[in-house]
Length: 246
Length: 299
Image (cartoon, rainbow over all chains, first blue to last red; front, side, top):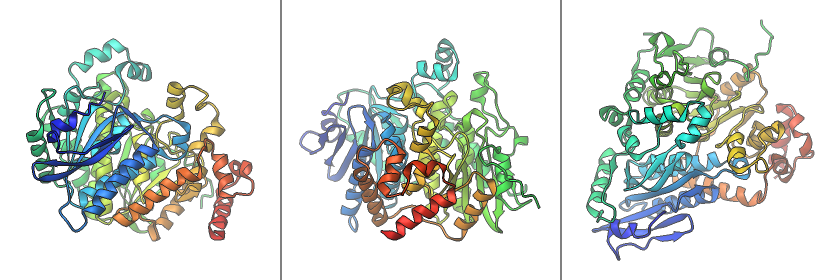
């Protein structure tokens, strides 16, 4: 369940006018002296085409408004149960709407907007891919759940016994739900603890780190360093650099 | 001269690569001899593949240098795991540096490999970023979709990031597969066993009519090659700057208004003004393209 007091914790009471409109959230805020744009999904949204376009449209508005000025940091708030499951959304090309959101995030990055994603509540599969996972810094708030699919459903689909999956999940971060698993694999940069705390300082740190990351995708290297994803960085490097014919 | 038609749908990933590139021009990176298998599948006693279900390398097409990746739909439904995804990501990073004429992604995938779901999901977001970085470096990326697994889940998103999408009618493109929607929402929402409905909602003719597939070809490997050759000469660019993304935003918003309650491709074809919408599934791709192009010039 999304909690509006989140924005008081992030920016301090009175320093934001974020508007919650159903499953869409957006608005200006201020972190110390720095103006910030907040954009995201709310209350375990099933992300459909309308919500994807609302998010994309807001990113484009922020990029356009800041053209020629200092690009504001964008704080993405992700609370999503995944993509909407519907025949109509499939027919209209929900995958294309998500690709469009991704392009808008990439435009913001290339235009110099530092980007941080905060996982608030749940971050599931396609709904998370569309914008949350594309930010230069990803933070999981206390109680955040990150997953592709829960273990029971995974057991049904893969035909591997639930008990076995549960046992393996205690040692391997690679398939089981959990923000800490995504931390070990390098896709979540930081886990914030202490519900109800004042997060102004850690948010400022995350924004500074986003500036340093400057569009460089260091997640696979981080996953290797943290021991949760040992092959991705090495294999990608091999393919990227192998001498042709060698 | 071999006049025998090779079905792209039925061909393996390696056979598709062989049919697309100039003879003898292909060099594979991370080839099967290197035994880059998935330790995560092995841990679950699931079968592994020496190439982890994707072939990546360099070649020429019509004499032009390309980088190419082909997913093997016969292995775990072409699903993306840690190694599989890293190979595609590495290829796109190589493209940003080497600047080939294009990257060809032969997509045949249901999306994330559940046995290593977290690694697969992260890998897809890394592919998305690497793909957009390659495009920003001036390298066009073309998706070819015509295999049994289609392009779904994260690979459906990746496909729509590409500059050109070459599809056959048999190829399918979407996000959630019909089986998943039926399981969660019921058979009334989407009957996954109604094959003609599935194709009318996800297939190449609908995607071409909506402008998502840029080229529709018959299920013939040489037709895919011809379309790739044509795209190498002249290709559409995916939107990347503010003006083109605002135009894309407007077009996507308008699409939802133009097709307000549509749940079947038949209604899209009817709304677009095709003379006999119910006959569309039977049309050869050439004839379908001709009718669509005629409508476009009428407007």
